[in-house]
Image (cartoon, rainbow, N blue to C red; front, side, top):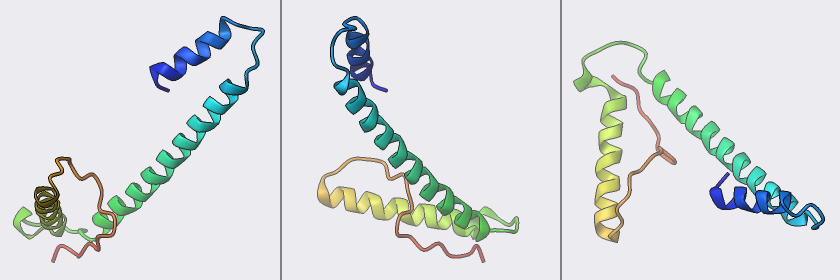
Length: 102
């Protein structure tokens, strides 16, 4: 929870006669946020497992499909950011099809 959310909770704790509807709304919103994060993390877990399955054997790093794809994705994101003026770090492989290491 954010500090602002905690402040709201503490304000209600200090005012025990007030209606707590805002507390319920705050928690419902936070629960929704947590559920969305869990969903995103499960997607990321599947993507990482897919990457791992595509490189089952130990080999030279220069032949690793995972490293190759990461490098390719990084270049594409940088080129896109340069065109749009955005400056951020990409954190996922959404929509990417990963090929094997060989």
